[in-house]
Structure formats: structure tokens, C-alpha cells
Image (cartoon, rainbow over all chains, first blue to last red; front, side, top):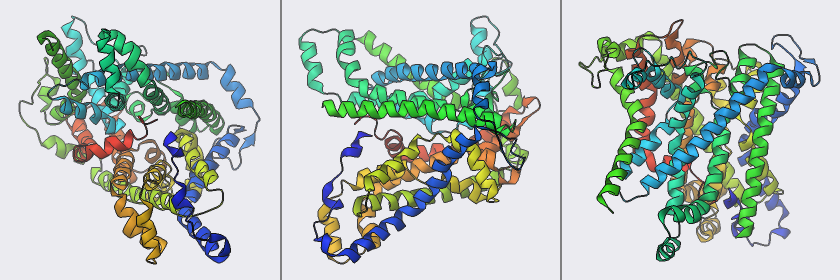
Length: 313
Length: 273
């Protein structure tokens, strides 16, 4: 995102003597407005305003049917913080997000290191690894429901190989979250792998050469050169994966409906359920505000990090 | 490279390939299996006979014709609007003067920070106020703005050589001419990238179409899959998997044709930092 700063002054300020030609400039301003208006109007109505309106809804008690929301102040937030349910949701969300982020970084880097070797067929595997990432979460979630089926899914085959019977993944509250996380990880590991691979391929070769001349072992090279040089990529992946996993939804909708017993209810599912099954605009809004604040802080952290990094160069 | 090292590398490569593609293979294989294969143990790794009627059954089990049509219409319309917004916005920000342009651009990028779930309920209320529940415009319009696409295109247009655009200006070409006969042709790869990424996103979109439609005839494909679940869960796996193929196949085909653009689009801005 720091490429934002690569603005070229030349085209933006054509060196015609603009100051003396006021009417022409007014026309240019109008053209600018006409071109950006549709986009900004849509964003105003469907992105900026909803954030404000949502914040207002979080301060009300409303069932979506009554003509007017009742203002209740911070009551919803109080309930969220003191109630048992929301703490469970936050805990589940943290486990989910940390698991997905950690898993995709570690596995993604592993796969990228593998694909960075000069092996035949790595191009094909590269394609295979990325393919699940572009497919509908609802569809691949459904394919995995079948795989996890304890009676005739592949899960039964895998567990019978070690002499066990398959757990009923999606109806057992201890197994449901891991099941959803496996699917989500499978769907997203290709993204981190490809991004890491691009990072690896952009590495300066001479550093590695001098390291090998110094007799550094593979592990030392990895720890002292590869990992530090990849740290901007790691940071980028961490942020984007946090943001996307916070919003995981379709996989859960198809696989578990947030259940059993709330075992897979992460924040995004909670907001949806409160709003569209329970028709409680207040708690739904408050949950959404919590989500927004968390993601905003993370995004701002990213911006600061990128600025600092660019500055240091 | 030692033989042992080579062997373990190729073994790892195979394992990774199998894990990533196995579930997809299983999806396609199961969609063609007779039910005897589906319930057999050990499982049939290859269908003992190809039951194409699973696809016919799936097609009839829910209004999949409608789902397809709805998905195609909303994807095409949504993508067209999003890309048009991206192109016009990017052009304006690069080639036109306006006071506080940087501030405005910052406001545009701020939209990237708004998570979809935060705007869900307010947007539902807005769309229902407009009477757009169960309509194409209800599905399409809230997602027709472009922040990321506009950002990508702007970054690209900033790199276009001044001389060409100046030449067009001197020749008396207005902004629309400059956009369509100079800037757009030079930005073709980036426009294609933005288009494909937008298309894939709209085709797979789930939560918004789920909320904004409430009759089967207005559902899109991914949402329609939920209808295959009844009280006992998903039952007829052969045809459920066939229906899943309906959703996955178009994107897989697009992915294999336009891999480069999709990867470039989705990972844009990652490495350069």
C-alpha cells in the first residue's frame, strides 16, 4: 500500500498557465466531480453512512419491526461485556483467527519454500495450491461436509486406518471448530504460499552466496537471512489474514450454522445471527462496532508499520 | 542435490498437491457416483459407473436454472458497474485537478477499512426502505462502488508516460477521448485484472445475497446450495455434490484460463510493501 506515495506530479499539474484561465479550471473541477460522483455516492450510502448508522443502532433496543428504535445508551455494550455469551464468542473468534493466521503463515511459508526449489511439476502444484482460494466458500464447505461425514466420508477411512471410528465432526462441540478451521485453512493457505513465494523470488541472491561462502548452514541462513527479509511479507499476510478470517462466514453457514451449541459462533456469525435470526438490532450493532474497532486498530497499525518501513529505507 | 533430499522434496510436493486437490477430486468423483459407491466401505476411489443423472437430479432438486440466471445477471451487472466506477475514479484522480484531491483519495481508501459485516444490518434497512428486497438492484447496487479497484488502476495510470497523454491533449482530444482511446488501451492488463477479481468475488458472494433475497426464484447459486439441506442435513450426496459442481466449475475454468491475472490481482501490493 505504500506505493500510494509514488505520485507523479507531472500529469497532475500540467504546466499550462492555469492561473489566468479560471473558467477552464472550473470546467475541469466539474469534470472531476462528474467522474467520481457515482463511486462516492455509492460509498457514502453503502459504506460510510452505514458505519455511523450502525453505531447509532448499537445504542438502541429495536426488533426491526417497531416503527422506531428506543434509545438505551450503552446498555447493549454493558450486556455484551457482562454477559457470558459474548465472552464465549470473543474467545471462539480469537481461537479461530489466531489458528488461521498462525496456520496459514507457517504452512504457507513451508509450501512456498518447497515451491521455490527447482523441481519438476512445481508449476502444476502452484496452481493446485491456489485454486481453492478462488472457489466459493459455500461450495467447498459443502464438499468438506461430505468428507467429514463420520459414516461414509473420507474421515471414516482415515480414522479406521488407525483403528478408530471417526468423530462426528460437525455435531460434536469439541470437533466442530477444528473442522471449520481445517476447511478455512485449506482454502486460504494457497494465498499465503503464493505471496511468500513472490517474496522469496524477489530476494537478493548475493546475500545467500556470501552466506554460503561463510559456511553458514541451511537453518542459519533461513533464520538469519530469509525470515528477516520476509518480515514485510509476513506482516502484510498477518494483517490481510486477520481481516479476512474475522469475516469468515459462508463456510460456517454451510457447515455448522455457528453450532453445535455456539461452538463455531465467531463474531461475524454472531452479528448475523443477532440481526437476522433474533431480530435484535442493538446487540447486532454493538457486536459490529466491536468488530469494526478491532479491525480499524489493526489496519492503522499496518499503515504505521508501512510508513516506518518506507522511512527507514 | 543428494538423491535422498531430492526424493523427500518430491514426496513433499506430491503430498501438498494431493492435500490441496484431493477434496476437489473427491467432489467431482462423488458427483458422478451411484449411491452404492457413496455408501460403500472402503470407498470407491473411482466411480464404478458414471451416473450423469446426478446432475439432472440436482438441477431438478431446486430451481437451479433460476439460480444460474440470477448469478450470471448479478455478477455481470455488478462487475460492469464496479469496473466502470474504478476506471472513472482512477482517471479523474490521475489526470484532473481538484482541490483536496489527496484528502478525497484518503476518504476513498477508508472504505477499504469497513468490514462487510458492519454494514450488513444498516444496508439491509436501506435496501428494504428503497423497496429493493428480492430485486437485482438490491443485490447489485450496494456492491457497485469500487475502492480497491480504483486504487489499483490509479497506481497503474500514474505510471503511464506523460508524453502520450499530452500529445492527445494537444491534438484536442477531450477527457472522454483521452480515456477511451489512450488511457484505457494502455491500462488493459490492469483493467482485465480488476475485472476478473471483481467477477470472482461477485460470483462467490454469499452473505449479502442471502440476506437481501427471500424467495427461491431470486437466490444466487451459492445461496441456493443451502436449500439442499433439510431437517436431517444433506442427504442425497451424489446430487448435492453435482449441485456444488455447478457453483465451482465456472470459477475453476476462469481460474485456469486467467490464472496470472487472478493471482496478480489478489496478491497485489503484497511484496513491494
